[in-house]
Length: 273
Image (cartoon, rainbow, N blue to C red; front, side, top):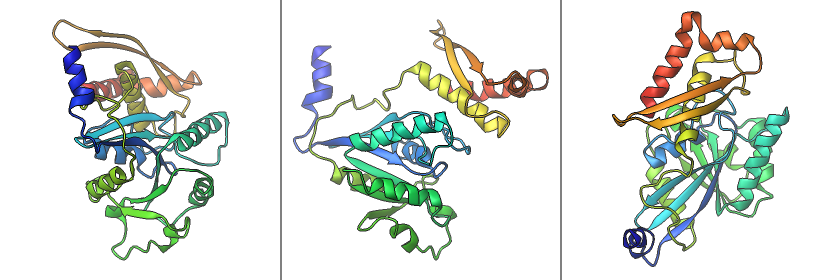
């Protein structure tokens, strides 16, 4: 076993191996989590059309033979309107300070918004270099004018991508690898995240709640995994408790005769399998 671990972390790592941390920032709903999932080729980050789906910085690990990139998917940066927003923005700002590179994702299908200007001012104060990603080029007009986005921050490297269909993603990864310092392989080659299975299960259930309840249930909804056991047939038994702010929201999540809860549970199980 010791020899196998040594092989994973040392023997197979070339001398020119590069590694580092990339903080992924942007306004809510510009496709940060979708982009990370596209880079990894597997769903790791929770995705929802609702703002502020990501609540904490979630490490996602991309590994190739000569490099390892550790992406920190941060909550959408915005001017906070409440305590939860202040907490989430503070976490994102901490990730900026600790990163080797900042990946700033904007929506290419829309003109820069006030929130983009807020982020631009914040990024001018950080140490790491910033790479601008124009996401959603599949939804942008063919004559896309990028001058307004480029004007937000001077002398910035820019990439056009579609996280949805993968256009431009390989080129973006190659550029990020080139920006990484020489360093070790911090995680095994097959590890995609540092979060445990309980966390992944709770986030998957929370994602399905947010997808199906639209504006009726706010971000304060939380999911706690009470039991997580592997059965003899190889499947997992998961018992989850859903918490909401008001009793009236329980009925929304349960649905008529339990219909909504059944949909949430079925979709979560299918994804976790």
